[in-house]
Picture 1 (spheres, rainbow, N blue to C red):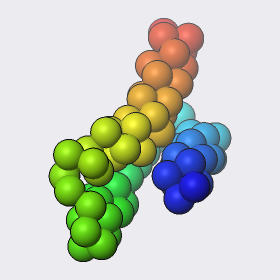
Picture 2: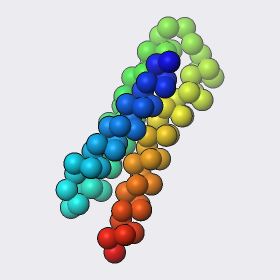
Picture 3: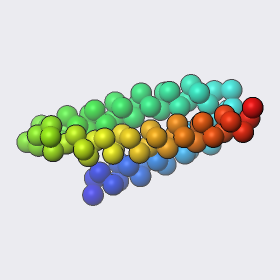
Picture 4: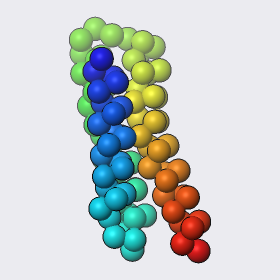
Length: 85
């Protein structure tokens, strides 16, 4: 359940940042979100490992946990960038 919650939080945070960021700063916003989200996912990975899960158990979950929100924000940024040209 925590995985689903974090994915939803990541998607909502990404959508909110894209919505609120001025057009001139969207690229910086996307990069900053990606770095921030990688840190959150790294912290969550460390938490799982400290509770006795192995890297083999945690890695597929964290690929989705990081990958879905990151892919979402980059794909939306790419589409918006194409429309503005």
